[in-house]
Length: 329
Image (tube, rainbow, N blue to C red; front, side, top):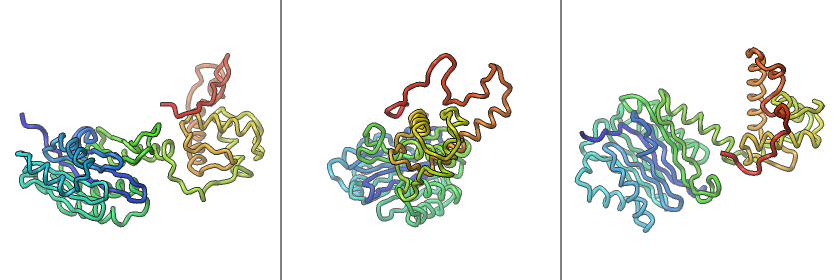
């Protein structure tokens, strides 16, 4: 039986300011992120699709590590492959030079567009407008590589995307030492099966951005005083972390409660010791407190007093757990 074809659109790109390489991809194919994207910090990024040759990813990284330019990588891989007419490939190298290849037998519509620091490619699409919109959007979108890759993916879908529909999407970005525990895997997110995979990918990314990345502008930090302190005290109280007075005075009890909340919710990337808070944390706390209030309103109590305790409260018969000093998985 012939292997399945990937009706796919993707973008590979390099961000010179961040020194990061990434791939964003969507397909009417389950778990596209397990096959199409490859990236390595200081080396480059690859998307292998259509009748995807998985070995293209590993072989391209090997060539890129040796300093082979993107265009030459594409030539070597496809030139040695008897199945090249059914392949599609996009590559960006360590310098940001990009190249793409669309085999003559890829299913229509299939094609690519290469720009400065990026390459867009797709097959089984509604038409050339898909990759064209991806390219133009990537070039015009403000922000860093992550914002621009996601915007390009959404733009391709708005022009019809894969003409068979939607199923999975992925975002892979490599940046030296920027990932969890100092790894080079800065972002590696996948939506394997979903009716709206790009929107779901963006939702997951927003949560990942909040809890794992540090991309907010320090100019947006707010002093914890007055109304801001009161809001924090209120929401921490609803969630069971704070038992003091709601007076807007940021004292040791408030700091301890907030530190425990940050640790238990994996927000070490947002932790500070200068009595200032990120607006994203305020927003997240407000949402969590509202959800807890709704839970108490709508849920019939099974254990007496259960609805009076938030998730951060001390368990009956025991003390609170110690504040984690690292992100818990």
